[in-house]
Each structure stands twice: as C-alpha cells, then as structure tokens.
Length: 407
Image 1 (tube, rainbow, N blue to C red):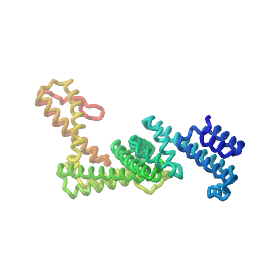
Image 2 (image 1 turned 180 degrees about the vertical axis):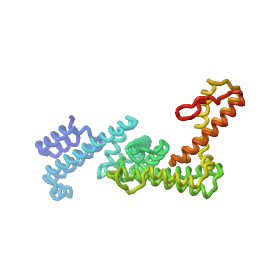
Image 3 (image 1 turned 120 degrees about the horizontal axis):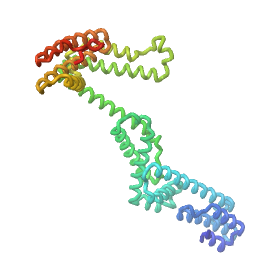
Image 4 (image 1 turned 120 degrees about the vertical axis):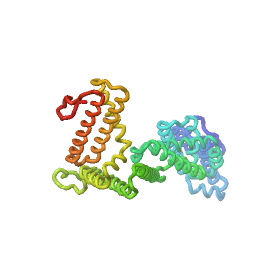
C-alpha cells in the first residue's frame, strides 16, 4: 500500500521518530485502510499530521505556542491509539452497513447500483463530528437517486414487517395491502426526517409501533365489515317482510351467539378443558349455544318468515335436488316439456320445504321428523295425482327400505 502524502510530509518536514512512523504505517497496512471512504481517511491523516506538527513545534522552537500546549496533553502514543480506535469503529460501521444491505437485498429487489450511495451516506451520517463532512453529506442528501433509494428501503422494510406480523395472518389480501401501504408511508416519512437531520437511513421498527398501526387498521376493517354485514342483514330482512323489531332482536341473537362461541374457543385455547367431560367447564358449549339460539329463533319467527330469510340459500339446493330427481323419473317415464316442468315444480317445492324445516327444527329432532313425515305424505299424494293425470299409474310403485317412494 502506498504511503499517504500526509505521513511523508509529517515525517520529512519535522523529523519525527522513524520508529513511531513505522508503528503508524504498519498499523495502516495491516488494517487495509483503503477500505474506508477516501475523504474520511484523508481527514484522519490530516488530524494525525496536525498532532505531529504540534508535537514537533513543542519539541523544537516554539515551546509556548498555543498548538504546542494542546499537543502537550496528548503523547504520540495517545495520538496513535485515537487513530486506531477511530479506524476500528469506522470499519465496524462499514461491516454493519454491508450486512444490512445484503439482508435487505436478499429479501427485496434493491438495485445494486444504489449500494455505494447507501453505504457512503450511512457511513458519513454515522460520524459524531459531522462538521468535517457537511459538504459531502449535503451533496449526498441532494442526490436524486437517494430519494429513489429511500422509496426502495421503505417498501422493503414495510413488506418485511408485514410478512412477519402474526396479526395479519388471517386477514384478507386487501387488508394486508392496506396495512403494508400504511407502513410504507410511515417508514418513508421517518427516513426523510432522518435525511433532513443527516442521520443514518435506518429505522427501528419498535419505535414506529407498527403493531399498533396494524391492529388499528385490522380492527377498523373488522368493524366496517360488521357494519356492512348488519346493514345487509337488515335489508334482507326487510325484503323478506320481517318487521324492524323482529330484525333487531334477531341480529342481537346472532351477535350473542357469536360472542358465546368466541368465549368457548378462548376458554379451550387457554387450556381449561381438563374436566370438560365430567363437569361444567364454566362456559356454554357449542351444542348448548346452538340449542338456545335455535329455540330463540323459532320462538321469534314463523316457518314462513324463516324460510323467506333463507330463500337465497334454500332455492339453489332445492333446484339442484329437483333436477336430479327429474332425471331419474325420466329414465322410467316419458314426459313432454310441459309435464316435466310441472313435475319439476312439485319436486322443487317439496325440497324447498324440506330444507326449510331441516334448518328451522335443526335442534329439535322429534319435531323435525314429525314435520318431514307429514311433508312427505302430502307430497307423495300430490305426486301420484299429478302423474295419474299424465296417464301414469304409480299406485304400485315400490317403496325403499325407508318407506319412501322410488320416483
């Protein structure tokens, strides 16, 4: 490694001890000083030169010189140790910067040509005494590429933070994107603030309290969804002909059921189910919650009101089941289009009512079986009458093991 002009001048001009100079150069070569930014290294050399110059003045012709008095308080050994400490910190800082960049570049698509700018700015902004490098820092801060770099750093940091956040595991992609965009905005503002104060472009995620930001956005979205669900429920009930008072009571029942189920899950999740099979566990079980809810609903709504509320769910199932049954019937009997539509409508009505009863009396098996038996009896009676009108006698139709006609 070629010796710096500063060392050569200080040695030849003031006749410093060659052994002391050898200690300096050996140290410099061993530490590979060329890894440090040129302007920083030159500043250290200038400081060392100034100290040696003052020492020479003190030892020669100007014992009362002001510089000599300051130098008298620091021996050459102390000057060298100061240089060693400064260079050690600088090289450690470079390793940290390089490690940080490689970590982010591995997770995000940061442009390699921005690494030099990132390293240079973060190195100079780390130095405690920035007065020597104010011009350098100002030039770097005003570089257009630095604004692009900050945008890339913000996106990278925000994406990394959101990916690690457990609170976002169960949210929709839309909510996760909203949280990520909010993180980007906060981090970008923070980095620009650091840039204006000539501080390193690094962000402590804990200080930004991103967890609280995410929780607020997730909770807000959840409340918005609940509000939208409630509004949709009230609109659906109104179209079904349910009174406002009944709708309000029904929504309260749904909310209470949701709360009770959540309490049960939290109870079990906490490990409080050791004696669940032999004694009261302190919270309602899903079966108990379901029975209470169903009893309250059947007491509030008639079967007609109930089926009107579930029309959008019952109709598709009834149509699918009716089409399947008609296909079986057509394998045994020949019907024209008009006859097929009539038979299909009768079967669809049967299944619609069957599914309505099944939901309405879900927790009352005895009542459900009674209703389904009556429903099937009248359907089969009407079905035989309908088919007889088409000249098809099904009086001798075989019944399966459950007592139901094989249509």
